[in-house]
Image 1 (tube, rainbow, N blue to C red):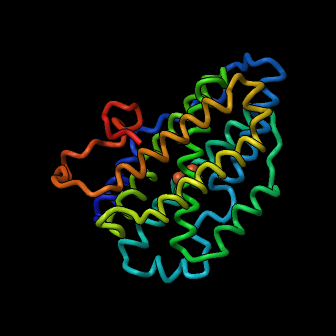
Image 2 (cartoon, rainbow, N blue to C red):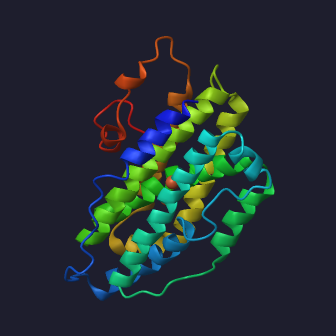
Length: 256
Ligand SMILES: [Fe+2]
Ligand SMILES: [Fe+2]
């Protein structure tokens, strides 16, 4: 994998990040405010708010593969920490309370520790695909400009993270992923989406979101990811690959 390309990506992604105007007047109904803040407070813990690093037993060996790998991984997690900070701004704006532990969060970390670092990164990738769907639903239905702007920033980062995993896995599977891997990928991805809806569905429904909407985002994200892992006969030169910004807005057929 071309690590320097990802170091450049993470460096350039630090630019042009306007902070949402958290002080804007709040116009949400009490039901919507409460649903939104309860959901975002859980996400504040899960999206960069816990151990913000790889935690599998062989994580350090993986990070030590090279100085570039270490830098890329650290820059990836620096963006995760930024998500937690942004979500913290939203929780404060909406008058919520911060959460330090949930059953879902403990289960998430247990899954990350249980196998090796490759499995942990697969879990994180699936969570990133599912979370991108979650943030798209929140952005569409939240009815609050600063929160919608925060979602746009996080979606932009997560799209980059998913592309990073695609590069990583394409290098691991030059002939395309094995059928068993694809099956596991889809099964875990749909399970992750169902688990998210189980925990957040009632709040998303209050805002006007539906399971069908979330599931459509997740299903498309999973399928697109697998499709882009298939080897191409004539890969585009690096400079011609679509930038994250275009992927984010679906301006290219390659959008994740
Ligand atoms: Fe994140
Ligand atoms: Fe991420």
